[in-house]
Length: 566
Image (cartoon, rainbow, N blue to C red; front, side, top):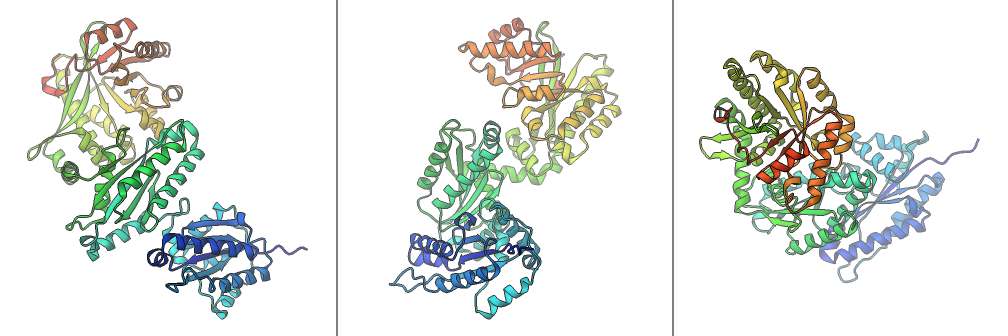
């Protein structure tokens, strides 16, 4: 029987890479890394079986080499590495570490590191089907020949997809900088990068193409900040710790190159920068400041970079205040349900209202929903606010019913997180029963984006409808999957996104689209509600188009429940 060579993997790393970058130049360090790569090829390693894990670390797949040739190749690489000279003036040589392993030997290391390295192996199509052998002998031969093995513990800190630092290690390094006070003397900034509307890019071009864009952006950021700390945080977000004095130009280059990556879509990379203050103590707070700065310019196509300023500092204070006072706000009745009227298009009479949360703070006044709702979602407290609003709506409807008013309905907005933080169907059903509210009088509004991002919501929407509640799709037409959602879900009402009305008077195509949506909905047995109605001309057009309900400032702004006129 033929002997199948054992599948082996080797790692080559220049340990003093950063020192070479600092004392000589980044170019010299990169040249040393290239010499290391060519040296590996000269030892018989297939170039197609190499992967650059980081700027100073190569992963080599050696399973095509017989066992002895494998060992000879490792020893040869280690020997040649000692002769690499990057600068005659400084006499600084690359400190090359060499390591090799098979799966079973790898499993004897720290489990997390083993899993990480196997992930790297999968990225280079390296099979995990290793032959059983005396792998321990490989390690013994390394030690007996005086070869310094790579510290595999370090691999735990590298993301296998982008080869950038994992967020946990990023926070540790940032916290070390803060604890040691290094930022007091150096002008250190934290950068937060986000690919704007990345979800739409995936929908338009596939997740595989989205991965290519992610890797491209990762490479652009690392190229722009070669000597700095660069991390892949999650999904489409990256972070950098830098003391570069040319940040604006570098970020502009990243932005322009990313736009050119796919000219049909022109993806946008936004960056928020936060300069570390002397009194900053938390790494998470520092990154939150950079994140808030980045979020403040998302959706704007005239700005791709912003620095943290006093306006954002005040907003950050407000967000922290909200997160720390949420429970107190609910218990102290600072959260109030407001109502925005919904009228019947034919009769012009009030037929329903949308319940909206307002935070009336005794210390800082009214807080904007644009501030406290995202904050409560991030803090996983949004379900408490939403259920508080539902409770107030049920109490209000109960009072109206006892006064003889049975024709008024209400709609409530739910976050997609409500369904993971609590049993929303059970809680709302229980409230309706306690206040003796017929369930058909209460409609649940869920945004198109929430439905498209969470497949489990279909089951929850079915539960609501089975319990007797109406289900409305909010912001219909604002995303890419509206028609697919109509195919997959059952809705009682479509709320057409107000953006369609913005230029209705001057853009005939807007009228055509809205009229077509109304006709389509009628053919599916779905009622329509158009929001954002502000003029009599818009109202008349919607009436002629057959729209069922309208909502907007023409009929009333949001107001406290007890001020709602019947």
